[in-house]
Length: 267
Image (cartoon, rainbow, N blue to C red; front, side, top):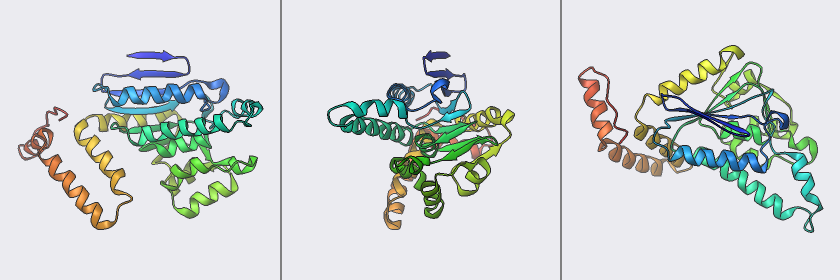
């Protein structure tokens, strides 16, 4: 199934893999008001659609995402408050979209062929997995224009070490795909012609699992990260008990013992 909503292409295949492709190439796939609204709506719909098992976030053009639309932002400075109300709403909307990725029960994989800068880099860092072409580059260059990448910093600092995050934030320099893999911003680098094939292969592997199990694990992973050690173990022990009582856990264990493929009911 394929649907196009002007700046976002939606494609759902028979494996349950939903490809959301940013296609506002003229604006370098910037996170404009319209793009944020469209992407946020698509993520919300995917979260509640039982036919969707995995989400792949891709883009058309030389830029995966150039961050916020600076021309759109600058135009709002002419308001009586200098744009304060608009800026507040915009950054709140962007934060909502990033959290919609992290909190989505479906795994989200970024497929990056081009440049991902500022909030575009934040978008990559917010995804559960990220696969990049060897042509891709990443940066948080706000410091170069007097606007520190404070909100991208949230996602970035949850993916890479403090020193690596601060180097990107303080210099604003572009980072190669190879370097991004080394510091943990992305999972792997592949040659550009193989990018979609590799990404879809990973997505297909995940899509073959029980969606109940995957959603349980994804939620628990992010929930336990900021807990104290004893609290994290107590929390995840409860999660495992609840998981063990689910039908798919019973089916999966039985299938393993009986040396057959499991038949998931996603519950």
